[in-house]
Image 1: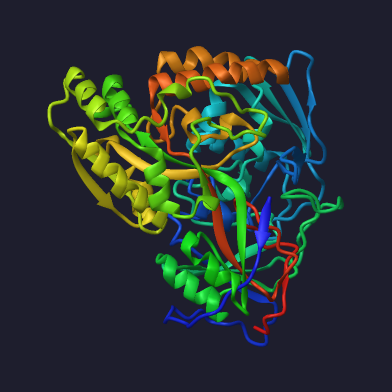
Image 2: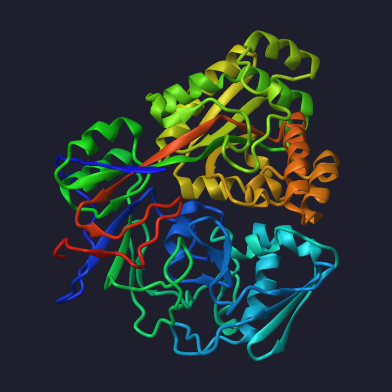
Length: 507
C-alpha cells in the first residue's frame, strides 16, 4: 500500500552537476550518500542496488507481485524432476554497452564470480555443483541437492548476480558495462553518478510489471546525487532541485503534504530496522550476552524516537508482518521486554567483563541514529559500557566487514518475498551467523520445495532466530521519500527505479 501527497520550501546549497548540452528529460535523484562501490555483486547496500540496477541486469527479476520472472533469460528455466538441474535459455542478441553481444560464456563467468564474491552467491554456492554453457545461448546449473531459493537469489538486485562481459571481470571491478537501459557516463565521487540512455537497449516485449517486463529508457539522463544530510534532501525536493529524494525523516511528511512542488511517497509496510550482532569475534560470540541485549532493549521506545508518528511504525517481533505468507509468532516471546534490570542479572551470569560494546551507526539514515541513541541508554542501564560510533554509510559498510572492529551494527531492509534473501540467512553476511542451531532449521527449509511445508518450516527458522539471537529486530516501519510533481509514471519500490519514467521538469 502506498500514498502520495504534496510539499514546499527553500533551497540549500548543493553540489552542481554538469548538464548535457541541449539535453531534455534529465532527473536528479538525491540518495543517502556515496555508494561504497558500483559493483553490484560486491555490496548489499541498498544505495548500490538502487543505482546499479539501471546499468546491470540479472537473468531473472520480480514482477509487481514479487513473482520471479525472466529478464535476460528468455523464459523460466526447465527444472528436472528431482530439482537439481536448471536449464536456462538466454535471450538472443542482447547487447552490452560496449557493443558486444551477451552469450553463455559471459553468463557462466558472471555466475561463478557471483558465487565467489557476493554474499548472496556464497549462500547458493554450497548447493551448486556446476555452471556450464550448453550452447551459445543456453546454460545449465546443476545442484548437488535441491535448493528452493535459487531463482530468488538470481533475481535479487542486492549482492546481485548481474551479467557483464567476461573480459571485464576483475577484482576490484574497474569497467561498469552492463545490458541495462542506462549506461554509466561519469562518476565524480561524493558529487554525482551520471547515467545516460543506452540507445541500443534490448527491452523485453511483455507489459511492464514491477521490475519485470518492458523497460524503456525514456529519460535522457539520470543523475544520482549523494546527499548525506536528510534535511538537505528535504530542502532539495521541496525547492524543485531534485526530482526524487530517498529516505526522508517522517516528521517532514506534513511539509511534503502541503507542497506545491513535490509529493510524499509512503511504502507501508516497508521493512524492518535490525541490530546485527557480531557472532564471529568479541563479546557477542557469547549467546547469553546476546540474550541480555534482547532483554534490555525496548522496541517501542526506539521506534518512537526514530519515527515519532505511529503511522510510520508497528511494534512487532514477527520477522514478517501479518498478511505475509511467512508470518508466524514462533519464538517472539523473547521480543520486546525492555527490562534493563533483568538484563543486568543475565549479563552478570554470562560473565560480562566490562568490555566496551561498540555500536556502529550512521546519520545518513537518521532513524538508525535515533534508535541507536535510545538503545545505548537501555544497554548502559543494563550494565554495558557502550561506545556509539557514528560513520557515513559507505565507511560503516567497510568497517562491518572486519569482525575485529564492532559488536553491533544497525541496518534495515524490506520484507523480501523469499526469506533466504534476508541478509542474516547468509553465513557470510557481516554478523556471520553460522551456528549448528541455525543450520539445523535452515537446511531443511532451503531444501524443501513444497510451499505449505516451507511455511511450517519457517516457523522453526524464526524460533531459532530468537533463541540463538544473532539479530535484534526492532519492529516494522513505513518509509517516506519525496517525488517531484513533474515526475510521470514513477512506481515506488524498496529500490526505486527510473526506467519507464518521464518528466516535465524542463531540464
